[in-house]
Amino acid sequence: MHFAFVSGNPALDLAGTVVSRRDEPIDLLAAPADLERWVAECDELPERATADFATFESALSLREAIYRLALDRVLDRPFDPGSLEIVNDTAARPVPTIELSDAGLHVSGDLRAVLSQIARSGIAVLADPHACLKECGRRGCTRIYLDRSRGARRAWCGMDECGNRVKAAAYRARRRASTTAGRRGPGCAQG
Ligand SMILES: [Zn+2]
Image (spheres, rainbow, N blue to C red):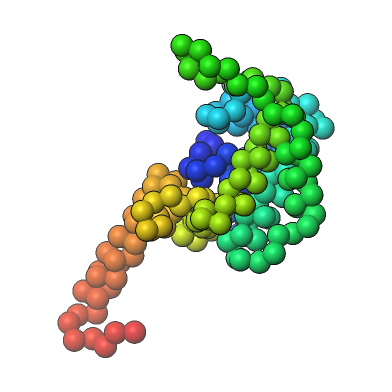
């Protein structure tokens, strides 16, 4: 499975590396190498950061803390204190350095710094009273994303990831319904 960066925030994208959390969770970060790949693919983070096992474990606990706080926000309930502690402690550490050149922005730092950066991004979005956080409308997706659309009308984490699948399923359901109705013949009582 590929990583999706559709949540509008790297902290929420990290939380999204466990998919279908309520039904049959699939963890896309099974090993430190997966985390290295995720960091490399995430636009706002250094191209390369090596993950040892201890830092990998910290990343997973940060991820679960971010997810818990984002869910608290979506459900409009108080933040879980244990998760707050993890995110705040991580954010207190040094962050990656950034450099501007003609080639653009260059971000560098080790994985500890990367986690600090992610924690700070998470804090920024979770603390913003105007940030519209939503859980994806596709049943079973459970990804939480930042809806920046006009009028906050976005229903899915991403069109490719979920929107098109929901639309295709709805289309198939409509077709099935019309076929069934056809088989029953006109005038049959519905339901
Ligand atoms: Zn989704």
